[in-house]
Amino acid sequence: MKRLLLSFCLFSIVLVYGYSQSLSISNIHGTIAPNAIMIQEGSPDSAELITYFNVTNTSGSSVDVLCKKVELTMLDSTEITMCWAGGCYPASTNISPYSQAIGAGLTNNEFVGHYTQIAFHHFKPGESVVRWVFYDRSNVNDSASVTVKYTSYPLGVDETAARQSSLSNVYPNPASANATCSYSIPAGSQGTILVRDLLGSTMQTLSPATASGKVTIDAINLNDGIYFCSLLVDGKISQTKKLIVKH
View 1 (cartoon, rainbow, N blue to C red):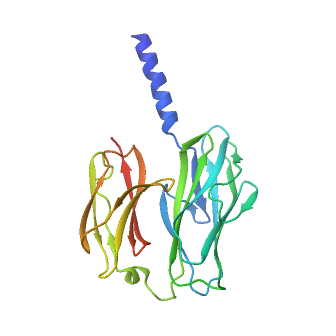
View 2 (view 1 turned 90 degrees about the vertical axis):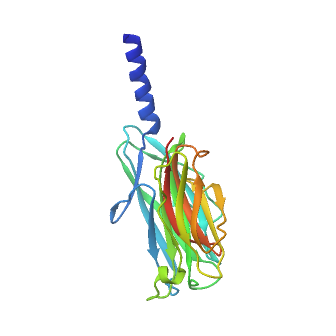
View 3 (view 1 turned 180 degrees about the vertical axis):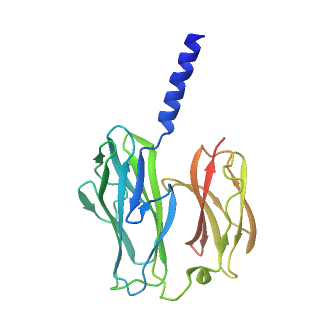
């Protein structure tokens, strides 16, 4: 009985450790909710949009942190670069070449993302969507991420009205089998729904046959974890919702 109890305790410790999250992200407004989606607004007159994040190690030991850039959709003639772990890297770099050691309970405030226009002095109207992921070099599942919409719509233009599309929250959520969400696509536009994991890999692609309705997401064959369901209208992300899979 004692051996059984000891084995159970050891298993519980391993289980908690394996699923614990050591990292959190914040900015000047405070701590950012896990896997949040935020908007960084500009306008066609903007020359550059700069993102600053603080990364905190909430664990009791040092963590070597890598940064990954996942370009979910990019406006024509734009690029985005990162500065992390003592260096700034070209737009072709999606994972930082070096990791940043962050001590137990400490915060690193050196991350900078630069979103710029390549061919012109100012942005075209539209948006780019990028997910920033910070993760333990030795454990990719120990991560924190935030998705940023870099927008450059003319001042006074409502983004939602311009898109005229919608994607509902996923139900049920968490899901263990099938999950559904409702969508609406503007007449004459082509819509696609992508299911991606935290690192931006596409797990499922759904092609709605009508301008509005419901789609079914197969969660049975997805591993436990967090996913993002994005509605693309004419190739550009319009809406993104979070899906949690738990079997």
